[in-house]
Image (cartoon, rainbow, N blue to C red; front, top):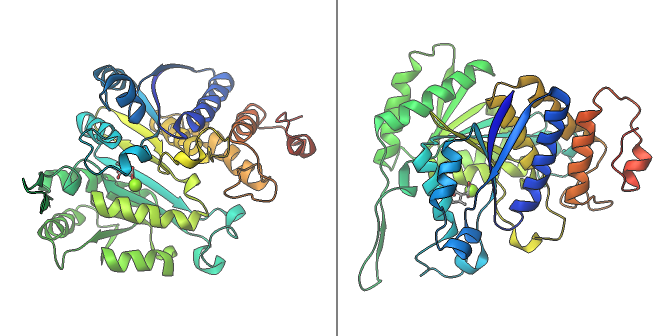
Length: 371
Ligand code: IPM
Ligand code: MG
């Protein structure tokens, strides 16, 4: 089959990790006889530098016409340290999410057996963790009215949600729970926020149509604690935009590195796949960025396209790289591999899946060939 993939490398380490993701997609196209047609677009600080606009219209068009979007990272310290900047890289991503209606952000968090000792959390606490975070992505405080008073002495960010916005992501979260361990936890702040009370009421109502799923509720402050105290209690977590942003970074600690967390942002017409780690500008160009989150995002992309076997092959190859410790410095300080070598290994492995005679020696010599 032929698929149009919009590729947005973005800022910082984005281009390096996206290059590895493309290597992996190319390996999949070779083995499974698909054609992926890549069209690149600019977004973020690099787009501001070239066009003055964090999301040029051309990029938006490319994305709209694609079967799936592969995105790297966004952000640059020169904007982070300038609160008065009117145009910011992140506006590009937020506008893209909104324009394409990518309301449902899925962030899987897993304690990988091979990395269990890398997490700063105790092994016995995180062992067996497998959580799917459903974060609402196009509403809430991210998209509310923003104001700064004329004298600069006060500011305002509004948060609003409609029943419709809550329902559409909740349906998807319930359906995911049905396929998993049949538990859904709504994370909110219903003891304080009106929007959270609407979430609780709406989700409780909807739960009646999913009687096989056990629904419970946690306030976000308690959830933040429970995620590191007893992460195994969670199956699917459903939450609003800002809470989801925060707890998904927190939960990434369970996996041993934020460099492993992939995500899918899905709407009715389009879908975007990206690592959650951000642009990590300090690492840009050094070849040390972990490409696994981007590669696992490719697995989610393939899954979205209905290419289930292909998606599993990518996951398996990524897990193999963890098992054989063909990994970057964030999870392998003793004998780290470069970003590019990890990408080479994973794409080679996909092309030689049935080869049991892995030449581990060669790999460790820095040659990615599997014999
Ligand atoms: C994320 C990021 C973004 C967000 C930023 C870059 C706007 O942190 O995808 O989690 O806050 O949604
Ligand atoms: Mg974030």
